Length: 119
Image (cartoon, rainbow, N blue to C red; front, side, top):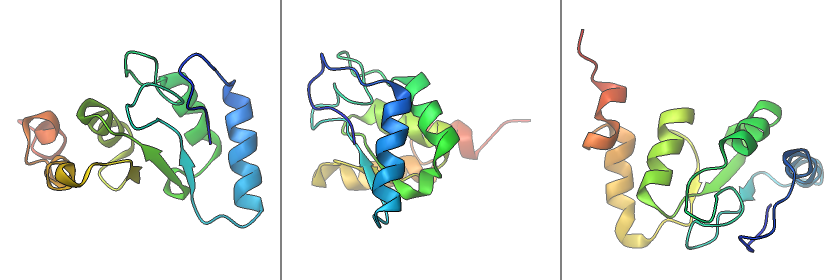
């Protein structure tokens, strides 16, 4: 779901409607568009997450039924921080699979604080 054109902005309620329609039609998971460059759909042209959009989507739809395209490392970190290490991420380059798994396990500085807190 979503747009590949960075200039095209779809309202959050419309995203939710389209996702719900796809799930009701039998889809097991729905891909939320981010584009290979990570600058459209769920992201602003600078690559930052459209947090209000994503919050609205996950408020209405179980995020385990979604696959979020997150080609950039900071986008992957954002999803892991906000939805946990089991969030479904897509549009990951093959050479980024192992670095992504280290983020999910808290073995990199970006996500270490999520798993190993100082008291």
